[in-house]
Length: 158
Image 1 (cartoon, helix red, strand yellow):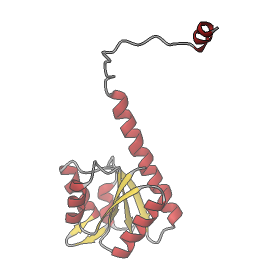
Image 2 (image 1 turned 180 degrees about the vertical axis):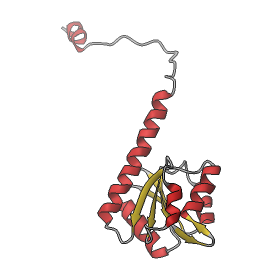
Image 3 (image 1 turned 90 degrees about the horizontal axis):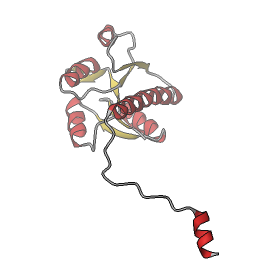
C-alpha cells in the first residue's frame, strides 16, 4: 500500500480522486490548498509516495508553481497532473522533470486513473528498493547457532 497526496481545490473532484485511490488499496492525504497540503505533509507519518495535482489550484497557485515550490523545499515526489485543460502551455515547463508522470485529462475513467496511480506507485517502490540495495548490510555480532535436525532427535529417542 502506498500513500498519495491528492491536491485539488475542487472538493468534488478531490473526493472522487481520493475515493478511487483508496478503493485501489492506497492511503490518501487530501488537501484543497497548497497551505493545507504542506500542513498535511508535515503532519503525515512519513513521506508520500506520489501526488495527484490539479493544474489550476486557485489562490494564485498552479500545479506548476507547486512543483517549483516543493522542489526547492525537498517535498517533491512523483506526480501526475490531473486537469481539464491538458493543452495548457504551462505544462511544457514540466516536461523533462524526473518526477513528472504525465497528464490525466478530465474527464477520465476510474480505470485510467488507477492504472496511472499504479505506475506512480511502482516507480516509487523501485526507487525505495534501489535505495535499500545501496545501503550497507548490517553487521551481526551474534554467532550463528548450529541447526538441530529432526533425525538426531529421533535417534536420541530410539
